[in-house]
Length: 115
Image (tube, rainbow, N blue to C red; front, side, top):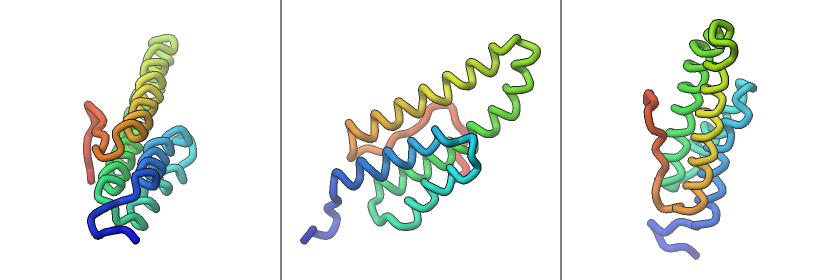
């Protein structure tokens, strides 16, 4: 039995990485449901912080996509490529961080936080 305030590290890694990794499905609107579900079912404060950050990142990816994808027609694909690289690069960084430093929530740089 687990003591109060002590959380399973493997479960923390899995749920945090799952929350951040859900952005790989960002083309599907339902992808945001994964971190929302994790936020609602978990009682681990680090997992909850990672789920909130993943939800915020979803909103940012969609917002920047709405702005940069049309610009990619003007910039011959450069704006879209930058958006794609940043979106995937930051997600890989977040998943890696969640697996290597499970006791510390990941914070995406340069995003707007609604939650």
